[in-house]
Image (cartoon, rainbow, N blue to C red; front, side, top):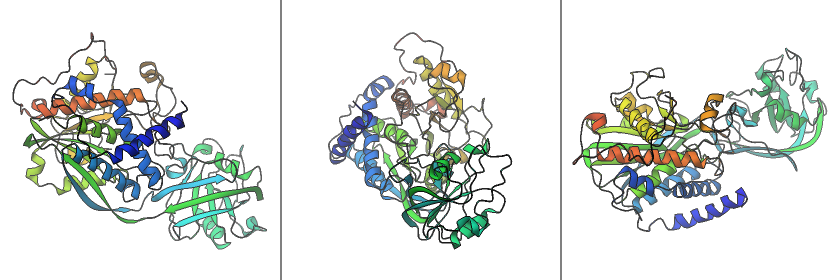
Length: 523
């Protein structure tokens, strides 16, 4: 079946799933050890949740940015599913300032009747074709107009580029009012270019770099306040298509430009689902951020982690864990870990002391994946400020032992606080988790171990509009969801390896070996 047909079919099922959220959980009470829980946690179940998030994004404006309809719908979805499964659900509201990368809905740039360009953060900083460049007034700009080239220089460009594009009024002589202008870096200041284009009545600007290697693929992006002209930063390749070979004057193409840049203060929330059973003085937090960036639906980042922990929670619904498990979906991670910061800041010292461990799952289905484990013992990374809380090394080892038992290679990833575990380790709570890669480049050595393509990003749609339902490795998602389930149930039953607190009985956190061990590699 064609991929779009698969997506449409599963998305339709997701809508049915949304309506059926109140149905009782099908979880078994004996999903109380690693083998049973992993058998129950199904990649198809994770994908159904991802499909629901895709549908919510599609219906909510094209993204799941905190404070938007797409995020609110996502939060309602996970809260409803967790409540239907029997968890004690609460929603923690908080406000946050959206001032950076403030695409409230994804920007759009396309040639009328031709190419549609891929939106991405920072004018293609991570591989997209363009990105919103700065605040515009009014915020909701949606224009279709002729394209005007303002004395640009196309590749191959001289080095250094001496383009005077947009520096002089003569660059716009004969331009029809309301055109979309192509303006290139070079010679005069950025401010002079922007002010002139603004003053001559351009409806929008596509701003691009000089053009000689290596800048052909390096976008320009910064936040420039005080101008009315809506602007996107674009790659030289994007500008070359829009120019249609014309250096000065009308290119012969019409373009469509839409920017919905809405900085401001927004209300958003974290969703918390806690097991009714378990020791309330020994809590295991299992977290993933639920929000996306503004340019797309974020089904890999971080619909993968969000969907996986929801699937784990539903399959654990009838288990009576020895320790309380607190599943958490954080908001505003993409704006600076703001949801996890708000949550940790809200805890008293006594409440913090009751948290035995934090597990974090942020991007676990990257298409060109590596199985990364957070480096809790700091043997392969620079220590974060304050170091790694005691117990983090043991959480790392819990994952390493699991992957070794399955004959699967792993590699360490820096324990630098880049995701939502950061605020937890800052206050001394041990943490660990999994990651399959973002904008980093896969090495030949990694490709030999994990497959995939050397020299390409782990996720070529990282923070781009193409991070949708199709942007996933099912192999990675399946393997990492199982590893997440293993760690979750292991610590739910005993945190002895982290803090010496044993559960009742003789729970063994090591998984059964389904087959003879083979070297895990990577460490």
